[in-house]
Length: 279
Image 1 (cartoon, rainbow, N blue to C red):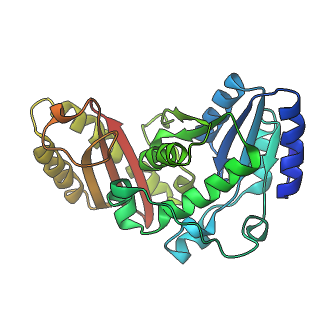
Image 2 (cartoon, rainbow, N blue to C red; image 1 turned 30 degrees about the vertical axis):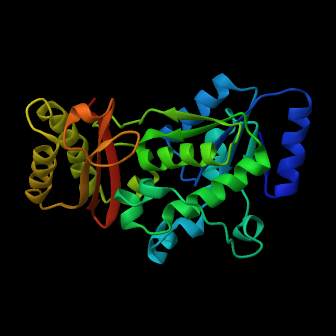
Image 3 (cartoon, rainbow, N blue to C red; image 1 turned 180 degrees about the vertical axis):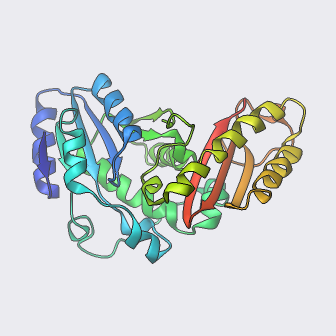
């Protein structure tokens, strides 16, 4: 694996592979890599000739400056973690990615007016600015995104469709620890005690899925909210039962072919997100 820090060097390296007819898979990350990222990379390895992994903490997708400053960064460990699975690791500086203030504006319609989009205005525009710049640099055949950040996945799919990009967006299943906690770079910020409490989120989602057999969506949302209200360790930000394609709340499970429960909650001053498909 080679580590590249500049856009020009990245384009040159990928261009050489493309000239030989190689298929390229892209895995965009913000570092602090874990087994969830590795699953993205392994799937990319299986489906492409060449794998490019980017590691870049994107400042323009953070609404909270403190959250940006606290975001875990382990560049040397990250390189060692993926060196046997990737061909190129792209690790640019902020100045390299943004030599001037970005001005791109994307319209995601109703997709960004709910859940993460409502709580973090401008977040998805920042995500899509960096992702589209990576698409332009790498021109991948396929790009890999985890289902844990489900709303992000749907918005990236919308971005590719709206820009008519010839890129196959490949969703990858959530990777969980043995106790059910969805793997996330932010988990590293949890205290030892909070880490013991964290699997409550997934246990609640699993029970909610079972309860969906006899509770309608609004009743199920209320049930989830009560579970979190009764747990002193958590502060629930939102729980939504939504159409998996439009991300809009539903009144009846039969409204759409696929339904997902999305939850965001605070634990030990760390914001955790998770979801489960119930239909």
